[in-house]
Amino acid sequence: MAKFVSDHASQRLLQAHKSELDQALESHKSQLSKETETHKLKLKREELIFQREVEAAQAFMSMWRAVWPRYRMPDMDWDDACSDAAEDFGLYEKILEDFLEQHTIAISDTVRQGIESARSIAAREKFFTLEQGQEPPTEAVKAAGEMLDLLKEAQNHILKDLRR
Image 1 (cartoon, one colour):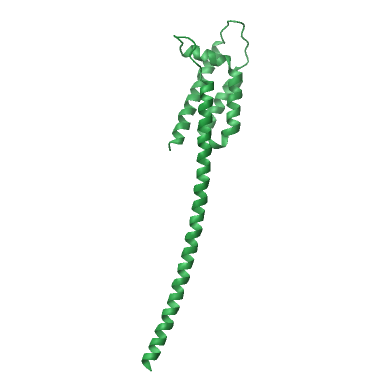
Image 2 (image 1 turned 30 degrees about the horizontal axis):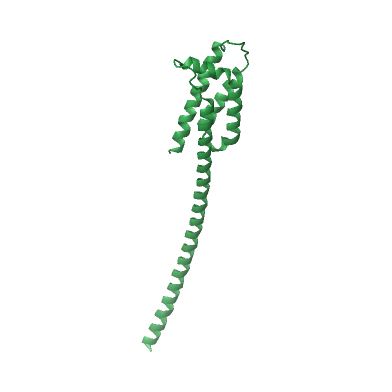
């Protein structure tokens, strides 16, 4: 009789303990499943953001090639390049505005501020007229150098941001 009672009690105790463990296991599985889905969504979001950053970097590099002055003579120096850039301030302003309009959300604040500063310089300094064969004003040439330096810094930051 004692054996029967003890077997019966131990089976009931084991069943109760087993149901608690099963319940805890299901709860843990549910929690892990929820965390996994959350992590998957975060990874997908990060992947989309990174893709946008890559697209912005590619667009910047294309813009860079369009904006950076080309060699037009064998002994061309920095002042000559800045003079060429000063002549195209209006065009550069438009190119930089278009880039910012399309890619502001995918670039870092540092890059955005640099490009906005360069665009601001182009917008502010574009108001001069050149006669045939005349060079841009000295202030405009200096401003073009500042604009190009800002764009060079932005390029370095974009590349650094992609490599993080």
